[in-house]
Image 1 (cartoon, helix red, strand yellow):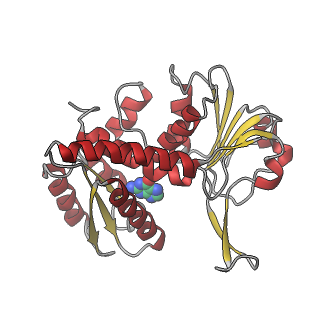
Image 2 (cartoon, rainbow, N blue to C red; image 1 turned 90 degrees about the horizontal axis):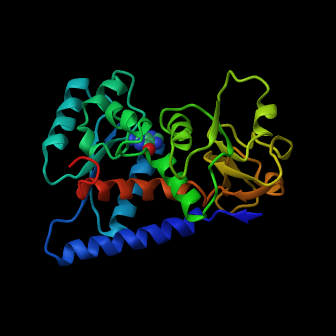
Length: 293
Ligand code: GUN
């Protein structure tokens, strides 16, 4: 069994991005700029956006955050999106989700200029992705593809099972792995809360991607020997053995499942660090106008 070291791969990619930004800076050009719109006081959202700012700082990408109150109206948020769509100094931006109840998320996402939609959430980018056309790929699936590529994991002809159908992870992941390319060319099964006989399906997986949001749901008896297990879950639970009084666990029962897997991502240190790095990669693509010319 080998552990997929997302922390190390993320470090390598950040070094590559930092070198590219240094070259840009040395040539006297403006450096890439990623903006984030943060609405309200959701602690998880503040943590994510803080992590993005820190990562930008590490690689030399300019980062800015537009903080709006929980009571913001759709009209006001649309105005901020318009402003960022038009600001030539901003290469890409994200609107951190979830948004407050009074705001229609789909309407906001659809208002982002697809060329600046580095989250890859706009229908234009999602459609392009499905058609294997140049597109921004959502950060978590993009990060997982990077792990598969950098560990040279074979995907062609493999049975890949994705658990969870969110628009951010499960759904794009299932599309990406069925595309006619590498990583891809897999036979993909997408499972969700209404799927019966889950264990029967997961036992058939050569590659199992778990993004269902249930702590340690996947146990050893659900995993085929020699399979690749990618754990997208992250849960903070109380722990007496750690100094901070809590620890992070995934959707997979790591200690026992790792005995069956050929490759497995740990939590923390697996998929998590890759998500932010994938967003930085998309920001660089936006700066270089690789997707929209
Ligand atoms: N909320 C949870 N994950 C994400 C993400 O990747 N992007 C945005 N915009 N919001 C999120």
